[in-house]
Image (cartoon, rainbow, N blue to C red; front, top):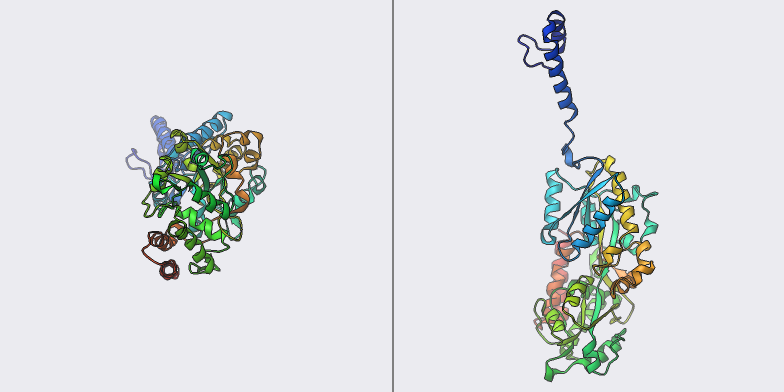
Length: 440
């Protein structure tokens, strides 16, 4: 160590000799030495090299993409946790959904200011786990949290190659909504939604009155087909990816898409050429009686004062029940310090026991302590219906960058529903594009 401010002295050893013969320098020497030691000891109080998480060990930085109506409910949960004990503090940062994964990537790649805990969608876990970015949470499970506390399909969505990379906050499948007033006008029981393909077609025909520009259903050509089409594929007994290969041209996938086209062309129960969000507008206007969308729509329906019902998705396929879902999961970056783990698991245990507030967003928490409780059954008209589908949800396959992987498929669905291409032709083109992208 080099000493500063002592002319002709270069080492601690020299300084000691000088100090013994010059007592007046003792105070200055000791003060300087103390400053040096304190500076050396405090060097790791902030961000660390190698992507290590920053901050005190009892403070947990938590990122979430809940920039919509669901944000206040997560804030409520975090604030309640912080008030429930004084050992740990969770600092919630809401990052806009549209920029969320871009910001996550920037934080991870820059190897600084990486959050200690973050929310990740189930269809992203495979991609990030393959990059070695996520910690195996299964290794941490014990007294605080365990897989048995959550629905097995919630755990499945967060599992890759037998390793659990996430703790599920919720499972959010496709839902079925209907206009009760239109049901009454058509002579249908407003409290009895269709549950089978036969009933759905029967209801749709009765609810369609083209003279009044009213339809039983409005087939979206864009979003949320990312949920609707995989649901139908599952119900017809198919798989979009099978044994690691693209499976878009299988009989079941063709049949699923043809069914949607037939709702427009054969049965005439849906208007043609619906543009983005056009099906939502028609539903809100009382011109489309039945609607498929996600549980995140609850607040919009309620704010519109629409007289609506919500239930599980009817089985429109001919083989089995099935509904496509995604999930929100708590994940931990590999860069997080071990000293943070106790606080993180303590928070996750709390959320698992106290996530009823999350149901107020229309969601259904994956924690058994919540969705099996009596309070949950009365929380609102939607969340219990969401949980009813937990047993037969289907998730995205283990394909890297799932959103981009199905882009060719969604282009094919759009083209077929707009009448621009034959169903088989559209799916064959999508099969070729997706296979080339998969094998790059």
